[in-house]
Amino acid sequence: MNLERIGRSRLKLKLPALRALIDAQQSRAFSALCEEYALAAMAIDELTTATRHDPVDLDGLEAVCAEIESEVDRLLRTFNASKIWR
Image 1 (cartoon, rainbow, N blue to C red):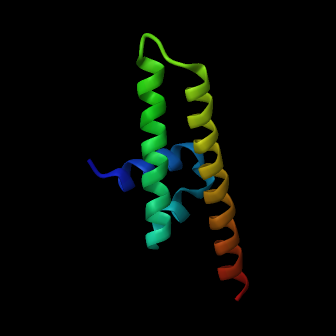
Image 2 (image 1 turned 30 degrees about the vertical axis):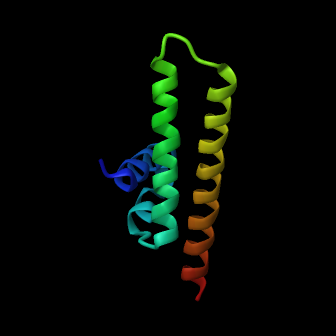
């Protein structure tokens, strides 16, 4: 299982305007962020399919995913803007 690929794919679904930038970004830090996103998103999948789960756990994981999505959006838009203007 390639967590980085899974994370990139899921981020591209959540942030369609940034698909090309998500594909283009190859730094180790970004790869690690994609892996973290994959783990959190897959944990959400597991919780939502479980017959019983603690809503607090689900809320926490959804918050983690939202934070990563915001960070990716900020990083890629900032990176792309600085690249264009240089």
